[in-house]
Amino acid sequence: MPENPYNGFTEYGIGIGLRVPHYRHILAKKPVVDWFEIISENFMVDGGRPLEVLDCILEQYRVVQHGVAMYFGSADKLDREHQKRLKRLVKRTNTPWLSDHLCWGSVDGRYTHDLLPMPYTFAVARHTAEKIRAARDYLEVPICVENVSSYCEYHASEMTEWEFLSEVVELADCGILLDVNNIYVSSKNHNFDPYDYLNNIPHHRVGQIHIAGHSKFEKYILDTHDHPVLDPVWKMYGHALKLVGNTATLLEWDDRIPSFDEVHNEALKANKFRDQQLAPSAA
Amino acid sequence: MATVLFRPLTPRWRMQKRWIDGRPMDEAAAEFIKPNDRLSSFERLEIYNRQYWFRVLDCLWDDYPGLRAIVGRRKFMKLITAYLARYPSDSYTSRDLGNRLEQFLREEPQWAAPREELALDLDCSRIFRCLNWITR
Image (cartoon, rainbow over all chains, first blue to last red; front, top):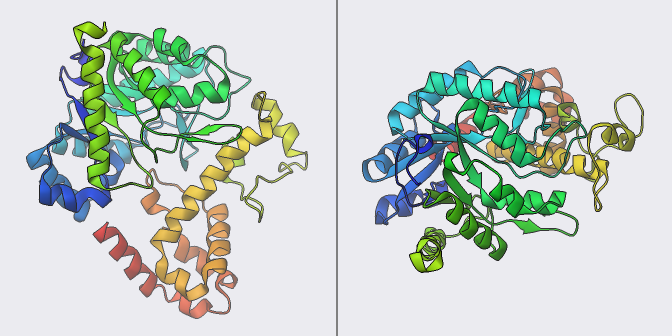
């Protein structure tokens, strides 16, 4: 089930996030990496080093765009300037699909630069799905929405997070970027069983998976992306693979970024883990 | 919720204890945020309030090393906090966070005292900021 309309009928393996501290190493050593995920907004510029590096990367590697500022859940309409620049970048990278978060982050034109959880209501689901459809129609590329990690819940919510995610993607007819680490973080912060989440979403819509590390505090867990992937997340990743099949997976490491080799080794570990999980004997 | 996030933290980096109408913040937070068995509504909301400020302050800290050197680290933090409280981000990219900093310094030069003139001579700051972006 890896190829589907939500990832542009591609069959990508394990990817790594393209990050500034690794530029020099990647351009000089040209390591073998199946694909790189870029943060779209970092390259939605008129020129300069970001685009110069991106063009060099595009000559050698496959690139998938991941965004942080579409804010499908904000009450505001899609930002036209953002959409225009994003479309220009989509044409440049030829990304087979793009992703952004199921969250809100702006209000009345003011931006929080955060990925804020939404109240899980039917009205919000309809509004969010409408914006996803509008973005997809304009950008002309499949869209996957990513579940975010969260630290609070609203009284206004009418359903669980996984029910909300399912409602949105069905209404929008879009894909899911399933962030396994985010599910784990939220499950600990909100006392739910993460396997209920994994088991109860439309698996055929999963176009991509994220795995990452997190940080434990006394009373909550933060999604910090500054560690290797932890054991419970590996376990959930294995379960997710069995449910959705061999799916393009990104290893996220965005803070306290170690050497490229260390991140690369973690990606190779993910590759091996995925092969083991999907081997016929593991079924 | 956005109004809560945009409100500056206390000097000890905590969420303010009173809401804008004078009510205890505990009460205001409990109206829309559920508590859990470990954290109150206030504490859950505070995570986001702190994350917001740490993120935007970090961005300007990195973007304006020149201005930071002119006014000093402590004053710089106070200056950019006052700036962001007046002018929250109006762009999808944090790259534009400082777009109105020069305007703010002209409106309220006391934040850079006693080096207002030097701080307002922002050519140096702009050059640093551009260099940062070009080489990033």
